[in-house]
Image 1 (cartoon, one colour):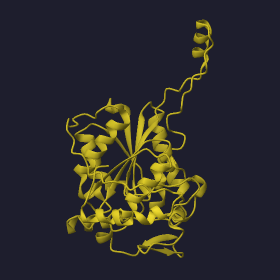
Image 2: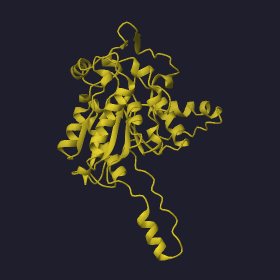
Image 3: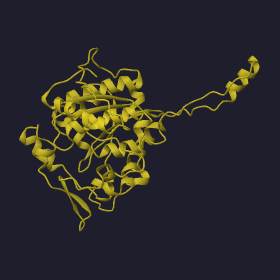
Amino acid sequence: MSSETSLVFVPGAWHKPSCYGKVMEQLRNQHHLRCIPVTLPTTMDDSMATFKDDVEAVRSAIRQETENGRDVIVIAHSYGGTVGNSAVKGFSKPTFVREESSVSSQSSISTATSSKRIPETGHVVGLVLIATGFCFTGLTFMDHFLNITPPFFRVNKETGFADLAVRPQKFFYHDLPPVEADHATSMLTTQSLRALFEGSEYSYSGWLDVPVWFIGTVEDQGLPIVVQRAQIGMVRMLGGRVVYTELKTSHSPFLSQPTQVVQIMLQAFESFTGTRADETPKALEVANKPFIPLVRLWHPTTWFRKVKSLWSFQSGETKAD
């Protein structure tokens, strides 16, 4: 059954898909899962590459799998979460509503026969999001930050690239051994500015179409865990079906804790497909699931009322979700 579902990996800004290497190796060799890494055009030293180009690259990978009858799970990290969410548009399983049958059995048979049939192609069945945000239809990546450039990168108008303004070893990989952090840093690429500030017409809230498993990163230096946790309550209120887990890692858990990430992905795989990948342990280690405070969008005071409880988790205090 595992061969009927493919995993499409979408990296974040400045990153090549090889950043998922440790995770993909385990999934392929130990669990015989089909892994499809996607290189984002906006990380290929082309300042003119756009968000649309990134979305189309992922859609092409998804289409290749679904047209061959395979379902797809999209795995996306950081900026790649906006790309991955947008790319699933139109690939989720359509809602199939049978027409009302008439009283007679003959009419019932006729109606069932004439009902529209779902094409025998694959679909996107789920998203695994890692240390990212939940994008909204019609908003660019930077719209979610009110178009205020965060301190970790600079807008270089001369080159058209987003220049990192922090040491990647500390910002992305502080929980890796120095040698590994240096190697990961050496693999970073350029990042087109256009992808971050343009392309609102191509962004899409894919998390409303398919179920999501989210991996939060407790020691993240770029996207604070308090922000990651807070957004879960919001998207659940908006109709998102999200299973939240977290690991005590940096922004890059697939490098520092690949085995734990694989464990979560195997749980997500079983949840999305109803089947187990080959060699999946009968008893998986359950990732930490902290309590997500309820945030009522129409009652802004609840946002502030929950801040204390959100921050309390940073000291290691958790409750069952």
